[in-house]
Image (cartoon, rainbow, N blue to C red; front, side, top):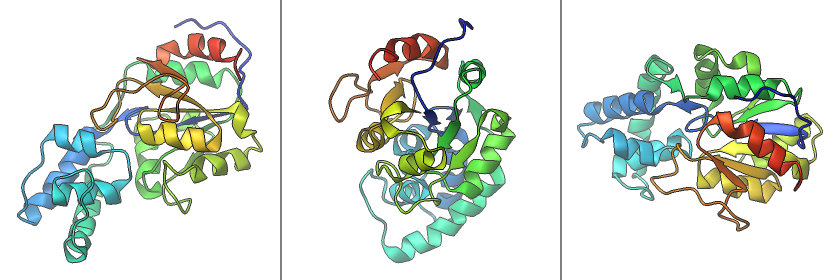
Amino acid sequence: MAMEMITTPFDLIAIDLDGTLVDSVEDLHFAVTKMQQKMDRKISTKTEVRNWVGSGIERLVHRALTNSMDGDAIATLFDMGMPLFEEAYAQCNGSYSGLFPGVVEGLQWLARLDTPMVVVTNKARRFAEPLIKALQIDGYIDCLVAGDDVAEKKPHPAALLEAARRYMAVPAHSVLIGDSISDIKAARAARFTSISVSYGYNHGVPINVGAGQLSSDAVIDSFDELPKVFQRLAFSV
């Protein structure tokens, strides 16, 4: 990675967690299957779980219990499954997860910009905080805005706007690095610039790049590409 210093165009750098920094599917699949085993439900594949990730654990549990992206489990089933999932996930959180290639180098480069870095995730704080610490990236992060810190999860812009408020950052001069359509929608709604990674959990659908509401401003294959992308975006922010 090129390490030369540049002047960042951004007041705030927000970064998604699962699918962007962390490959957490192994942990999530473990917890889902433990829940399904105890409830005598069909066991989901790792690919299914990967495609279901990204909307918070409540939606993941609904999807795992209905075996569909948009299904809602009946209340009694969900009320039984949710604590079983949480118990299993608390036991394995961080055990099988790992950082995506290039993430550490990218965070090191971003830290040199001396710009606030905030993790903005739909994951609940009680799971997000230990995961960040277990993977030893907490030293790069100035703040965490978790899924239960705001009233609405991404794709709602509430979490991004909360991050901007905490650092008195101008949303139009802020950026979100994420992996999913939910991240793009949240960034657009909050007036953040959107950078997407190509390798994440976008429900099995490729990320688009362009000017539309469902397209990102830039797509990268690795955090190694951030210096080049930041330099290019400096002329458009």
